[in-house]
Image (cartoon, rainbow, N blue to C red; front, side, top):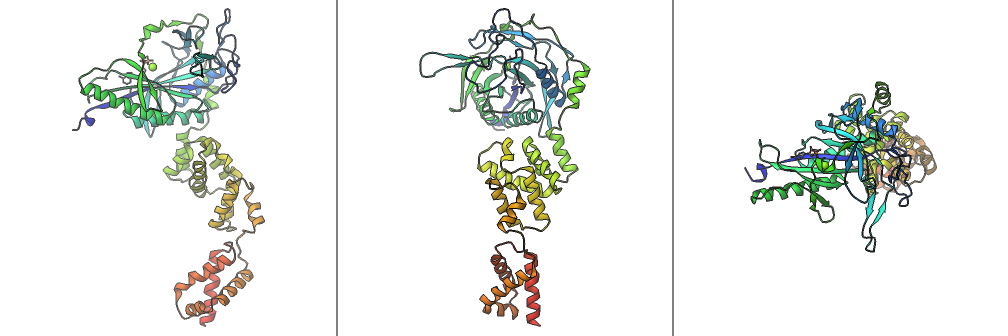
Length: 481
Ligand code: ADP
Ligand code: MG
């Protein structure tokens, strides 16, 4: 057994999911990213004396939706707690969170068929932002983010590798996007993970964990976990102990460094928030949220396989991003050829998206569902060849027109089955290649393809290859007598 195999990596993730509500968790200020600093701030967000928080019902509905989707226990009565610490971006001196009675407990995130168990999911508010190094010695504060609603999704220490942690993050992101719980925008920090990493010998109790803060992408998460696990193995192998600490992952330098030694829960002096009564969830509320749940990615994938006959790989590719599934299903309503549509989406549409470096959410910019459906319909009707279809697709993807039928007609790309026109084209080709034609007549059948190709070329690729093949055969039979 090599040393590398003698250590097991254990990861538990705390993912902060920013909720897609209109307003903040306890104030009516807009929950919006990118505004001018300190322009989205209500008196509650900056803790002006005498102000009181009022819970946002929409945020609670989103928590319930995620809880239902992940099979969590919904606690009918949960409480808000104050988590105290001092930092300039936290004007109250405490963050409103949930501690001993979170809104959701248990549940699991499905990751490639395996269920990764959750400890809890709780509601909390985000802090503001400190801005350092803006060209002078000062630090600045932007409270636009203060009070933004978050769900903190806490997993059990049940992930066993960097790769699995990455897939967990991706699976959770797909799910919250499918549910409209979160916009999933990683650049804007809509999902941020803290990774708790430890290593141990197989069968041994859990090792000392180190927490890596604020990782905003699945890829960085994998790198950070990988790096940290190696660091811990090196420390332990050298006979040193792992310190309980919080480290910051530097995505540019690809290394972590100590931020602070880790607080214990008692350092935060949690108390129930006297300004907020216990949060009571009713059966009616749960039933209403349940009735409005959309189909989730895994269920969609299974339906594509079961009802539409797609392969598991195709179904997975189409359902991993909601906008892609919407494109596919929209096209399917126009023209019911699931397999062909799946191929087009996978091989052509997603290729353009990748080539342009666009997010999947913008897939409808490449082609609309109506255009995709109409395009495949043209092929299936025998109105255009696959080759012409690619040209039509290129026009659509370049924004030159949005109606395949119109493009085909305007360009004169409709397949020619007209015997007269094809016969005329063949006559021209024969006249231009009399020697080759004679060899074909004399039995050199290999030349058949050449004549079909020449006729196709003369018709600008719009001739129906099958019709041309039959025509050449027929002419040959006549000649050969
Ligand atoms: P805190 O909120 O202070 O970070 P928690 O006890 O709530 O502490 O734990 C947070 C996360 O740490 C959870 O996701 C949990 O799975 C993970 N965790 C706890 N112990 C370990 C460990 N030994 N190795 C890896 N992850 C761990
Ligand atoms: Mg933590």
